[in-house]
Amino acid sequence: MRLTARNLLLRLSLVLLLVSCDSAADFEGRAREVAARWQGSADDRAWRTGFVPLGVLNPYGWITGRLPYWAARSAHNKAWRLAVTLPAQVPSPAPVRWPDGSVSHVPLVSAAAAYAEVTGGSHLIEDPCPAKGCRRLVFTGVTLGAVPMETSRGTIQAPVWRFTAEGLDQPFFRVAVDPSAVTPRPRRAQGDLERVMAFELVPGRPKDLLVRYGHGACETVEKVLVHETDQVVVVGVTASPTGAGACPAILKTATATVTLGRPLGDRLVLDSGGGLPVLPGVKR
Image: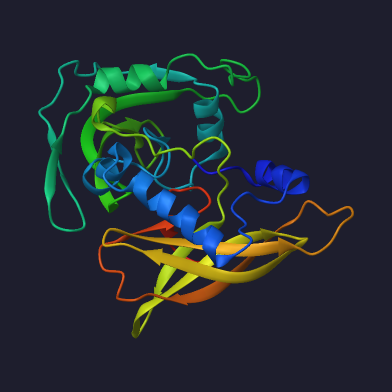
């Protein structure tokens, strides 16, 4: 998972980012290491062919935020009540269609197990039923449905249990996929820091990538470089400190366009600093 902005700023205030390279030769060595470490690894296989959610592994809640205040407050404080008997049997595996057209059948958990997981204890509970704004969520039915989920292979419709609640016009959901079918998003190795944050293809220029990267307030970015293999494209930044003295703990971001030797195709884009896949979606 990615560093929080706070943690990244703290590290920037202490040291020059490890992903900064003194020269193109330094970048090339690091890029070769990153490519070799990723290609053919378990993370690589899972990212390309498995079920790797990009967010919370098993989220729950409502699809939209248009809810009365009491509903969110009651859910936060786990003020629940069942007015229906939930099925305890485990359904048959559900088909998941991936953006490339392939289909996987993933195991599910029962509605009863999903409800028990959601309504279990939490250290975040302020009060089981707050004096102000308290109204129990009364669930009167459950059906199997689907909600959009971002994964390493693109957006899918993930199987969910949809719980009908009294007084609400939209169901409360819990992802129904059994955790055994899910591979967590890979983590960076100790000491690695993310530099390249996002990328997108440039319309009409199939060999060009627009990338967004971060750098410290006291760094001069010299070049954005790429290293290509048949399976991956590693992108990195060469930078140098602007001078001695105190430096504000500020993370700056910028964009740059890099040109590949051939169109990206189905190759993954990797960040040379963190060594992990870069997600598409540069925010201008």
